[in-house]
Length: 100
Image (tube, helix red, strand yellow):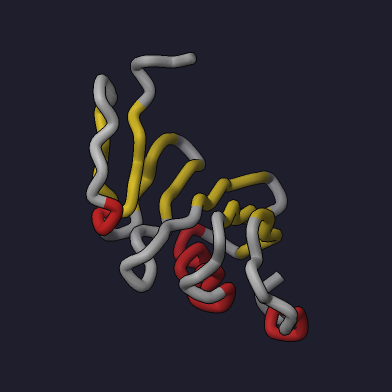
């Protein structure tokens, strides 16, 4: 385990992780080269945007902020190519047309 790794959490989470450098995220932020946080969305979660040779791949947790809002937030880093992760209750796949 990397004990020096920084942990990026939504500001609303409010928890501390002993022995870790915790960065509270409110706005979008570049974490490292080609790796971004969308920032806190709807005060409940964030998503990870990864720059690839084909475009942005978005890694989501639960998608409670809404898939459309997440993709829109990730679009600031480039054209969204794909989305992976938890899509709780999401069935409106036609909504993804034009984004991906």
